[in-house]
Amino acid sequence: MLLVHPRWRVTTSRTRQCVGLLFSVAAAWLAAAADHPPLADLPGIISSADLESGVVPLKAADLEFYMKIQRATLERYQHPPASDLTDMAEAKRLIQRQLAAQLKVVADMKAGNTQAAAADMDKLTPAEAATLGRGTALSHGRVDELVAAEAGMPVNQWDKLSSEVQRAAGLDGNTGYGSAGTGMSSKLTPDQQARAQAISHARASNRSLVAPSVPELKRIKAAIDPIVVDRAQHAGP
Image (cartoon, rainbow, N blue to C red; front, side, top):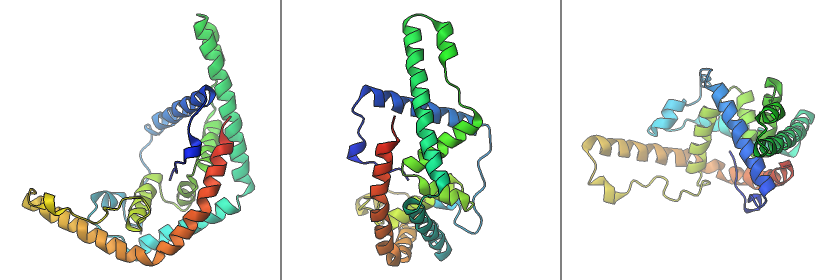
């Protein structure tokens, strides 16, 4: 889960270039991932398809898994292993290296020297790309994704589960969660009305299930947020 904070605003051309570089690297990762089939959902937990449907309520096992990951995420933020610190430092070094190379390429292109531009391009090795991915996740509020992945849940399934729990807990800012909207119901077809009712029932069930865990989720969020902000501020070049 990537948190956005006002202090992260891009204010310098150098930082804008770095952000552009990160988007370029991310695009390369996505292109590489397109050559591989998506990871299978973690069994025993609500599936990505059921989460996507919106009509299947969460089970106790789903919430239990989610809370286990959140507690482990907090522990990892507060007491990061040496490997996390190494990955963040290496990711920062790689970003600086790539940014320096990007500036050289721009200068080469402005001078009309395409041969030098090609030579100055900095290509990450697969190991470096993996380290950059981990380090960026650790530095930009996505430690929960790594912890969930290490527990066997792919990012797609985790993101959907996290979104559903956060909404049910009222921690996503969506104050309309669970309201069907009576003004719209009269315009729906019978099938659409049945689906809207099923979604409403599922959301009500999710709120009841998650309610006892909301105080703990708020405490975890309050403890993690300052660490996320601090890491992001120190992650740039």
